[in-house]
Length: 167
Image 1 (spheres, rainbow, N blue to C red):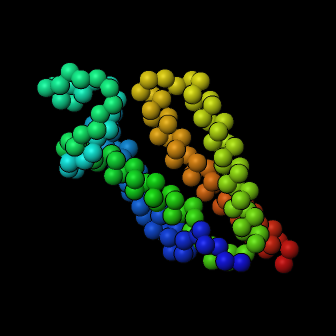
Image 2: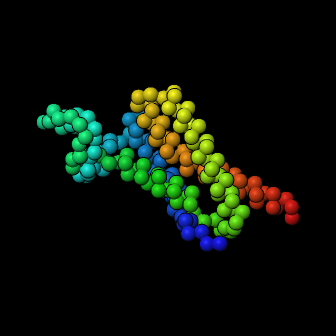
């Protein structure tokens, strides 16, 4: 059976090659680690925001929804996009021996990851507030991929271990 939604097997290594270094850069660059400034990489970008425009530009006192082009530090955003793409590549990379049972394991692992991630979301929404909630949402988004990868690899390892024990 052809699985059109899967990337070639090599994407697993490309994904880890994107995720690991950019995750390290992202977390080591945070202010709590006295890391690099977000302005390390900056360029004009579309900025969409709600609230007072004078938070970013002192010349305006307008309120509401705004979209403007502004030069912003994009280091964090580039790291987050690279981490997300890396985890996507790892999650949807084809296994060397992709068969119907591996597809079943994928579906089972994905459903399990969605359930666990929903419970995490509910718990986090009840207990985290302010800036900590923003960090939680960031972790929560990436955790769907991480939980899926961990569960799928665990199930795959258990399947292969069971097959080698039968021989």
